[in-house]
Image (cartoon, rainbow, N blue to C red; front, side, top):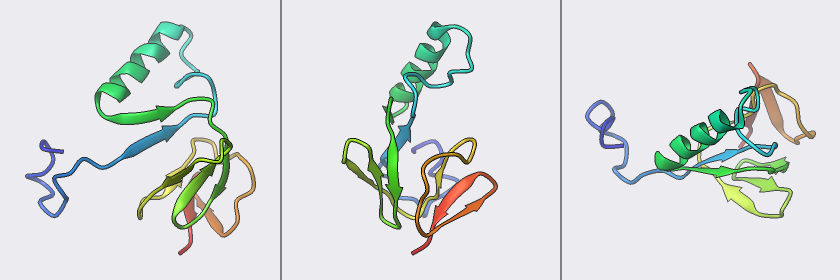
Length: 104
């Protein structure tokens, strides 16, 4: 955050919570070697990203994402995206350019 704050002074200096929900057992499964996925995972975590593997999304609302574990991940005004636009049916969602955007 400190690196971008000079360009976006309106942002809070508090680090936002960023969560990557991955349905599979590893991120970037397209990598042919597990070590590349593991390296990418470590880098994301070192940069403050919270990564949840083997996570199923049950519902997306205007305030939170309901996981298959019944955990709710709250979020702000940012859209929830998935790479290929597939997944369980979501209520009140618009799909635009592969991103799921919830309505308020």
